[in-house]
Length: 153
Image 1 (cartoon, rainbow, N blue to C red):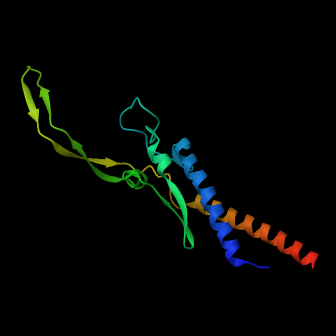
Image 2 (image 1 turned 180 degrees about the vertical axis):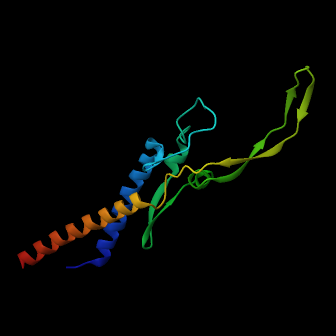
Image 3 (image 1 turned 45 degrees about the horizontal axis):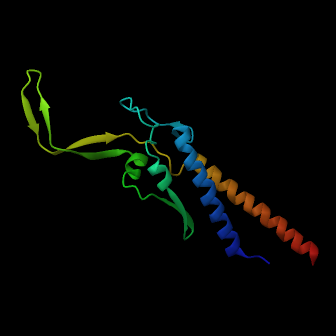
């Protein structure tokens, strides 16, 4: 019997799994599929690009929501990395020593910075290809089960 709701639920569930795996692989590729990320401005000795502690990568979760799949992260900086833009970093109060040896105090302040886009989640040709493949595979599986049902009648 044709169960459109089950077919839709299966498609959305499979999309969530497939897209989650591909978006996770973007961290290993250091790219959004084939679009390489811009390298760091300075060589940073800890971790790989976008993976220092792995918290952002682990926090990214996909969920079936209504008629689609939605990806979220509990880390507040995820969208800044994924979309790029301007951010602010808090600089604590500290002391400095001049070249002549004079010590002076730097007050706490905010420093503005520009983050290049390093997208790892989103829509694009590769995402659309994955979605189409998932839909096609589910429809083929549905046709096989439907033909078996008709044959057994």
